[in-house]
Length: 401
Image (cartoon, rainbow, N blue to C red; front, side, top):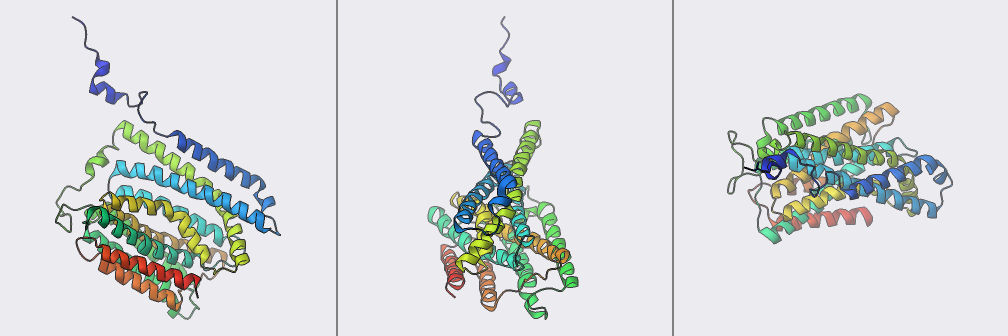
């Protein structure tokens, strides 16, 4: 009697996940992106000081900016791509945390490069945080609410998680961006205050992450239909996805994708200094508002994640869109404020943190509108239109003073 061909059994197929014909763990396009990003980084390390030496001409600055912008943006898309695969393996909210922390780390790197570069850039941290707030919490959330509703109608999300995010946003932005205007330091913290604020902000954010990943993970998971929350004793949704990362193949995939993600972040680190040089030149040459630098950093960093959030909303995953948008801004403040303040203390700079009067009004309107938008069980396109209108007002204030 012939023996059965075990090579065709499902068990044996699972034991050999790397068979020809199956999708590659790292796609050829990713290898090409890695090669291109490192090639550009190598060229600027070797010749950047010569290319960007003073006096810098408009043609050289424009060419360098275009190459740097495209490379950093492409690498950021690659980071999001790899982080998104990790997110699918880990389930919520771990996956969203990986994606958000990866992107915000890039933002902190860019801001630090500007702060440590030439020229007066003491306000870049404040401008970047405020720009991220306007873009993420008004433009992107507005698009998510309108586009998601157009395709699926009103969408459900976890109200407990949204409330937790918005509470953090109100507290962190109020203390970091509004309070300095009332401390007698011309919108800046003194050195003892800066150290204290950095410690408090980092400590609160670390505690928030710990609770989000542990005892209160259910706050950030999609609830059952018709429910505004996940019960404390319920099995968290997405746990089966987390189990997929525990096998040998899953662990190998996580390690490889994490290494690729890191390899895509490093060129951004190396190129950030050169981007800061040409950005400062361009803003000065064009006579543009200094806050444009912060807007530019926000666009570079958060465009990939914003696209991911809109896709989630259009795929009827409003909880993931909420986690990405609100979680991204909580991470932005929780990581950027301590980094900026500590760099200021280390370099002897007094970082300008206080917003102007008109910016404070926009901040308050954004927080209040967001609290009203996520105060119920379902999303609303009407609220989305309000967020988009508020973003348009931000554009008017910034570019048409």
